[in-house]
Amino acid sequence: MVEKINLNPAVPPIPRYKDKRGVDVRYMLISPYASAHIFWDSKINELVYELEEPILTEEEKALLTRVEEAMLELINVNVAVENTLEATTNYIDKTARLLIDELNIKITSESYKKIFYYLFRDFIGLNEVDPLLRDYFIEDIECNGANTPIFIVHRVFRNLRTNIVYRDIDKLASFVEKLAQRTGRYVSYAQPLLDGTLPDGSRVNATYTKDVSSRGPTFTIRKFTKIPWTPIQLIAMNTLSPEMLAYFWLLIENKSNILVAGGTASGKTTLLNALAFFISPEARVVSIEDTREINLPRENWLPAVARTSIGVGKVGEIDLFEILKASFRQTPDYLIVGEVRGKEAFVLFQGMASGHSSISTMHSDSVDTLIRRLQTPPISLSPTLVNTLDCVVVATHARVGKQETRKVREIVEIVNVNADGTAIVNTPFKWDAGKDIFYSKKQSKVLEKIAMRTGTPIDKLYKDLVTRAKLLYTLYRKGVFDFDQVGWVVNEFHKNPVAVLQRYGIRE
Ligand SMILES: Nc1ncnc2c1ncn2[C@@H]1O[C@H](COP(=O)(O)OP(=O)(O)OP(=O)(O)O)[C@@H](O)[C@H]1O
Ligand SMILES: [Mg+2]
Image (cartoon, rainbow, N blue to C red; front, side, top):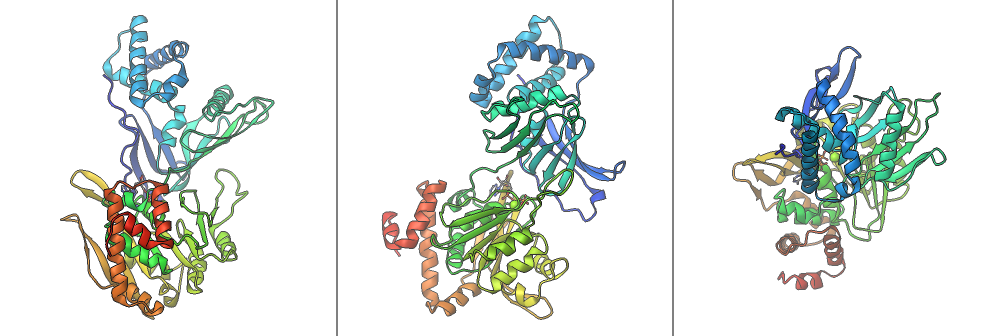
């Protein structure tokens, strides 16, 4: 039997490098066969992305070509794609062995495994681009023709040159035909523009030309992440407790400003999206991101995507700063910013100070570093502006037993930022790594602030918190996980809390 192929190896934490020249990162894409290697190439003074795949000897290459040709005649590729992964894998395995047997060739099991990988990649997947499509960190894949490398946009390292180059215009053209086929479209010289969606939701744009004066066909694939997780799914993953979610529910209903902090791939965006479920249904929401990831179960919502173009030239670049400025003209009640990186933070915090609440994410491993980063260049906010932040939630990678998980490490309230830039904080919730439980202390400065501002007795707020936590926990117990269902319950609770509590048998 061939080694089991794992198409979803765990997403690793990637350290941030101060100096690009020190970068040397490797992670699996299709385990155990294909991995990504990102490093500083001192010959060209550039950070590069190298796709590492099994290396074939000349004999193995020849054999692969023969088996592939024979297989093309046998396999109905669509049947292969529509079946389960295991069934198709087995089918390819069986057919390949049979063909090799018929050709009367003896090969070692090591050689066979390598050949099998390529058969799998090319028949089920999208050839050399397939491992890239499975790379969690890749946002865009761009090919500007033959004899020029494919470029990618990486979440952490941004624009990178890859070691993948189409040497032959015909081969590139047939790849574009394959892309068209997978999107259910058709390209030809008469209809040379392709605009479609791959089965996984990624957008494809391509041009189909054999014009020799140009470099031939081109394509861009923009990846789209799957349907986001609901707060209830995060309870199921034990990422945070129902009480913590109920706390956020109250904060968000009362228009607090929240920042999700954490390292690379620590679950920030996932958490941000889950929290945004709690925004009141009638509130006007504007979201701004680099890549479309946020998805909300609501109508009153205006999503915007800022793009930096890749490859050559900078045509069509719209930056976060401009979009953010424009967004305030839409007078949003809630502004969701996918990731705050630089000078746009100033506009965001000014917006917050003038009553437009926001939830956003920022790359940072701790609250201290975050507070410092906000006040130093290029962001350089004044302590007063930082003070408009109500709380910071820290997301983190964590290993519990043998399991790679994501946790909310702590929720930290910003009580006050002193003139010297230091912050007085309060930590109402904290995760205990040793016991894998969440501790809460019954004293929230932000809830006290809300009580004062709205004239609600603080005890009423705490009681509310407990009731909502019960509701969320009950939804979890009853298996109400689904995007639409959870969205419905939260929106319904807003209109008629008593009915919803009754429906789920919850006593206040
Ligand atoms: N609560 C969770 N439990 C388990 N896995 C999670 C959880 N949240 C996110 N993940 C997984 O971790 C990966 C990263 O998630 P996400 O994109 O939310 O992180 P991020 O911190 O926003 O990353 P980036 O630094 O790239 O912006 C995804 O593969 C996602 O499926
Ligand atoms: Mg993110």
